Length: 330
Image (cartoon, rainbow, N blue to C red; front, side, top):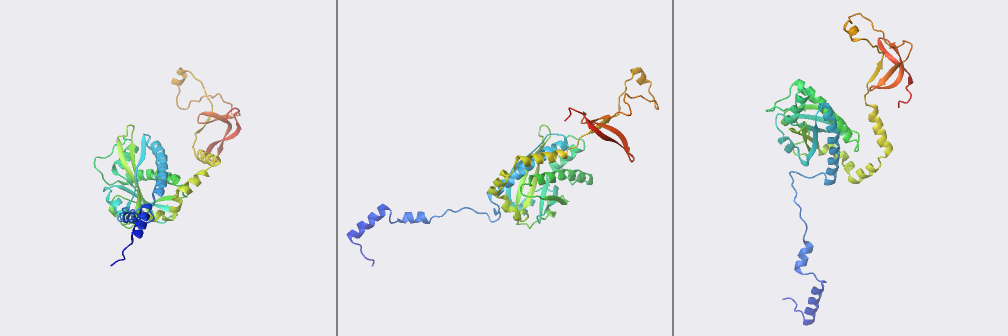
């Protein structure tokens, strides 16, 4: 039998309970209570939400760059936007794809491993139809690409690679190179089936009213980007963003401008004749131009007079040597 408490001990115990110095049974249960969160072992979240946000920022930048370049290449309205970024197993990604489809396996040098880009048939054939002179209509039924169609799509994928390299330059310099192409998803095995991947799903609209809609997926295995995960740190990202100075921005602008192509035209001379003389022209007739052979010619850049030059020959090619700059033309 337990020890019987005295009247004074009972009063002291009740006083301690009321003052909170002694925890009641309910309070003990509350203290020991733990927060339980669900976890799906089939789809483990290896990459943090903060790192996923950085991945989203990188590929939002990619969609902006690629939209501009693809619209210029197709000569029509193009709109790309990210609709989802998920972490899932590789087998789930492969199982979600149609067969046939258009899949390109890429190396992401200097990283080990590969990534995959999948362009669904509706988007693939819409792009091909547009580049072959059509209005960008897709086929009613998907099929495998011909050799010519593969060649056309490879040029589009090269645009994708350039834009990916530009979008990822804040993390590092990566060379995206085509390793192989496939139409059957079951034949593509870049990582084990249960390996975790990041899937970036983008929706594309092509045409003035966006009537041709398709999907493009970028699949990045965890093992491929594991060595650079620390660079996807929001704090490091913010600090690197602050380091960008006006001088660096100007250098990038100058670098892009240096790659811009311009048309240079030299006008040898002009002549004025009547309509009657024009109608009488035949092969072998000579027109006298209003230009002295000893005088410099005007050199135009994009139809704007910029320089004076003297014509000549370099080997078998005709050229012009710049002699001076036209004053008042910057």
